[in-house]
Image (tube, rainbow over all chains, first blue to last red; front, side):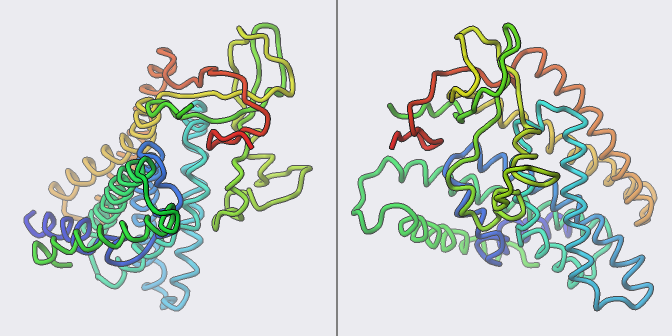
Length: 193
Length: 166
């Protein structure tokens, strides 16, 4: 249990998907203008990363490894992720059309989010058991959501601040992102993974 | 006018009026076409005729009804909004609840049997159970009217999602 907790802290905070591994940067800059949209995107991405990682683990162990098809890993994972997103979209639409109308916009964007594929490939490198792989994927995506919401909060405040025109908008956003990354470096040493 | 921080606003176009009900389709935002992910969400598709996977298809799928108490007419652009809290509650219901049940079921199966296959099966079962639970919660939210967008005002000419009229 202690190992799982340390692994999850490491995945969420120390080796954060966005700030340490530099994955999912497009959504990090693109969907963080408001806290609510960032939280919605974060939750949708958390769901897709966790579900697709479960499927990727099964495909890797019971198909690719079993039949010596490791060289097809990347293309297979992309297919699995795209299928997971479509499955999620169809399921949410069936479960509640109202929820789909409200949240459906996030799902197609996740298909091209490199964090989803990145986490799946990290699982393979880690040679983890199924439960460890799923918890790692979940913790990584929680770390992703956490940074998205924090950054959205900072950008909401920055939008109200008076800054030189040269720095307004994305330039100041990048500076703040780098400061946030440095702040997260403070977690180094808590746990490793 | 500064946007209300507790309401998520969007612009929609009236595509039909049926008695006391107006049917609206959300407008594609101006930034959609230039987004790096435009191709995947269909925004990069310029085919106006529509078809599966095109932006016209996706927007049509998100058509919604609104009580027409303001005399809306076909072709009018209006600003609609949903409460910020409702958006987060909806996301927690749709994504958070199934994940929580899946992880709980997986954790219990792992501690009971310690087998990858059993854990995978339990997680899949937990996920399905969570989706059914999400369906019930969504029904309750809908009954309370929390998921429905509400009319805020008519959009100004040239107004976009950012709120600026050009």
